Amino acid sequence: MGDGKLKVLGIASATNTIGAAVVDEDLVIAECSVSGKTAQTEKLIILVDEVLRKSSIKIKDVDAVAVTIGPGSYSGLRGGLATAKGLVKSLNIPMISVSTLHAVAFNFIDITGIVAVAINACRDDYNFALFGVGSGSLKRLTGDLTVKQGKIEEVFSSISGKIILACDERMKGKIKNENVLFAEPKNIVPWAVNVARIGLEKLRKKEVEDYISLAPTYSHKPNIREFKG
Image (cartoon, rainbow, N blue to C red):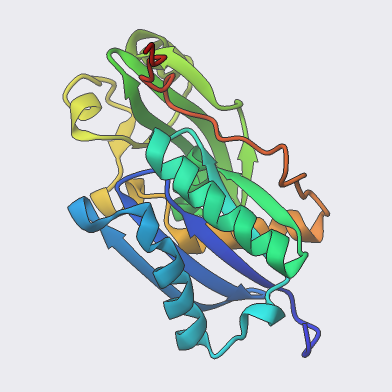
């Protein structure tokens, strides 16, 4: 922190778009991401190196690491958290956890209104959260929930006015509420730059984590069976 400005490294790995980004106070310095089949969390450290190179910021000058904590995929969250834990341990800096749903909602930080985020969890379940947006800030209206589609429609029916819904194509075909406006595909991604920005907000409030005990929040329980020899 040689220039007195807070610098936060954001790591996103909850979905099939993984990435890293650096913010210096309110300025986005650099961001790198990979999507699809090439989005393997083993490549996260390469993305971290790339954003640091692009930003001309040395790793020792980073003040905190923010990482998506879930909900999300099992392997993605484990890989992202392992990368973040390794960095904060070696640098002796704070770790900040960021909800995947919060990171998606941050795509709409410049609007005024209601934003809903729904991510397919398993079968008919969705990870869901509702946010109020205005004056450049997000306010949670619900926590991160795991609910059925019918419950989401019930929530929408109780809200007057337009709702921006960030969801996948599967849900788009099922929601019939005329007040719902569907987000563009690019705005349903929890970008690493959003993770870094939220991390900066939480760092200012000293909302940091014990990195040793921090664990991911999965969309559903990992399908792991005990080996019996």
